[in-house]
Image 1: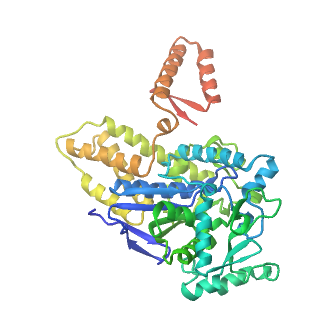
Image 2: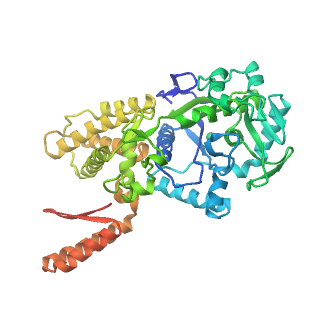
Image 3: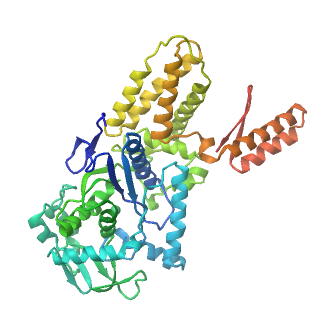
Length: 488
Ligand code: ZN
């Protein structure tokens, strides 16, 4: 590795040169979805952010083991110790088995990830598949004296923990701050202190998702699964742990405490967190009516949306901002992103048709260097995209005969766009993302038949073809040069 990648570490609050524990190998864990509802924008951002990190590390010749879990038990409403499991609640409301809920929403999450062209992780473990590992960790934490059992539940003793390890190291929240936020619950709880959190919960009779443990029937605390699965697949200490900023506290803070308490070892070297998404300047929330799920973006069915947006527009829009900045979604901004994305993809198509000249008027090596520098600087995708648009300008100028590229530079330019746009940013044309060559060939045939109908002044057939395609989500665009199509 000759280039150095700088990563902003939430733990140290600064950019650091990334150095993996094992040379050329990276272990990365990202908190995945709790599968009890349709995938929405809040899922798209971490998935796309860490997909680009995964892609760039692989592009930089690292062997990456990327673990992203599925939370299918133990995540309680409002992250509280006393509440109903989110999945069990949905199952009760819909009169289904909890695992039917899990299966249904795991499939829709995978579908959305495919549409957004996020690569599947190397391992996608589920919380319910790792109950034994979680129980083992709870046992060890108890043995080490950092937890206590009461009425069949086990709580991490945060004050005791804080005597040996600094609690709040990641979030910057100390015990006093945390007490401030939880004081109103005092007196109602069986916990020694309201800062303590459950690592195992006793299941009351109506709790359906339950397992046998040394402390009776119960279920693991939500934070436990990531500690157990991270350790199982990546070791007691691994390189990168990612997730949304909203997970810093309590989830990731609790993960650090659990691992220290269990293994006397800090679990993660680089903590990375993506910022949040707002819609029309407001935090997303079901009660605000701005909670848009991804399917609604793709088919335009939400009242807030002027029309449907291609998954690649969403991906491009997210990557136009640095992952540590906030993003505000709105129709105007999305339409601007769509224009930008189309310009980029059109330039890539133009690039394939350019003919080389004897000499070059442009330095492609310099552009390539700038692109790498942007990505090496904490995965700065907006700067990378700005450099790529310099390339777009050159491609269009070469096409117009105002600039020229020789054979070597032209092939370098093609490689550069293929590497950065397709492989690293994961941006592909909507035709590629929604189908395969067969679709392209069939569409070519359909448009040819429609063209023939028009030539024969059979406008009824031509319109019928256009309208029927529209119904299945394909838009036909007529221009002087002929007809083209795109997936809406
Ligand atoms: Zn997690």
